[in-house]
Length: 262
Image (cartoon, rainbow, N blue to C red; front, side, top):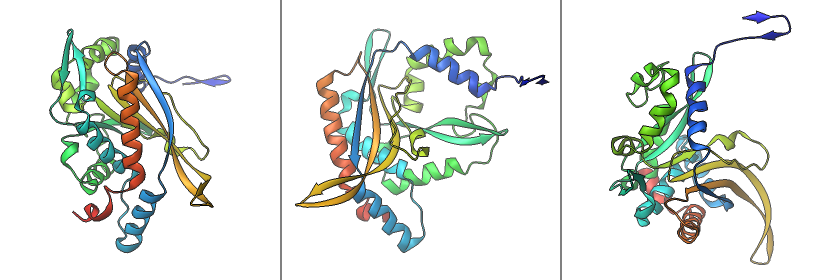
């Protein structure tokens, strides 16, 4: 509705969900780690694969692949609290926010990558690419949860609170999540997120840094990344061990190699 000097429009359902989720999670006991990871080698391998095959693999999928392997090595992080009980999930399901355009609005929708610890980088990349190409213009079409849009706005906060501690929902979407919003930034940028995941990776921008290697100065690509942990479950020492192992694995590029052709 156009008024004199301003325009009024109704809030979309997706915007109501974001508001409700932020309200539920803003008081969460979280600790955050802001770091930079040298991604020169994995980016080179991905570029080489594209030049040889014409196949453009998802960089977010590479981060998800590394994350799944490290979580499998430290299963205590693949957990949550439900009714004063500590629940550890057997399989690593990682929730990846995929941005899609629905009714002219760019909407982030969660895609659950199930048994991610058993999948290759290419398999995970294919799942994400398929979700991005989904042309159904309905929230929930990625996961078969279109009924979610029928939840009344005044019940959204309650629904999110209940889902946060529900084992069925945890198995469907996981308690580990990745969002890549920061990759749209052209300047060094980190983001501090809201979320219900026990471990939440927020991918920031990629920037060039000149570093000394072997007595020579080189320009290297570095990824700005924020890792958030639920402090009710994860203390500082386990979080530090996780970051050390995760950074090492991402930097190496070893999960690309020949596995990209599987």
